[in-house]
Image 1 (cartoon, rainbow, N blue to C red):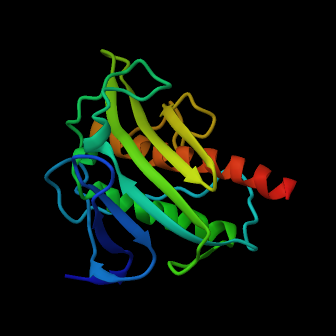
Image 2 (image 1 turned 90 degrees about the vertical axis):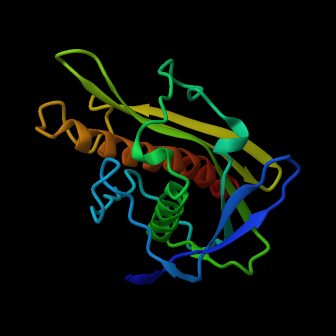
Length: 210
């Protein structure tokens, strides 16, 4: 299987009765994880979307830890939406934390930040929930749902999103022709991008004030 440099994976027994998986970005040679497009189509590539805004974090040298807290939180919905999780999409898989982590790494690289596992300046990004839903009859709308908690210095904040083709940052328009299965993948990916960028907006403000 093709290998690439992604992340070294550790298990931490946190102050919870259940262990949470954490991915330290970067380095470590592991087998590439490919999430199937909709459950049973192996080998389909996952689309990463670039940041919408511009961020310059070139002065930052960070240790970035991405935790999978989904089994700890057991959310039924994100805070910013009334749409329930079904946890029937491909993103319910434990391996989806690798794609979230890869997303985090790619977006940080866009900002010019240096990601160094030996840094003492640590950011924790904790995935609390993710799902993709198709809602409606006839005029069906795909929803990308994602919620993370970010801990940086003495600040902890939850970021969540429910993104559809009506959202200004949607990767596709309401007139785009895509299959139902592709739509769920597009909007789950966009939801990951959105919550990470929401944090970047706050991080930009913190840097500007220093």
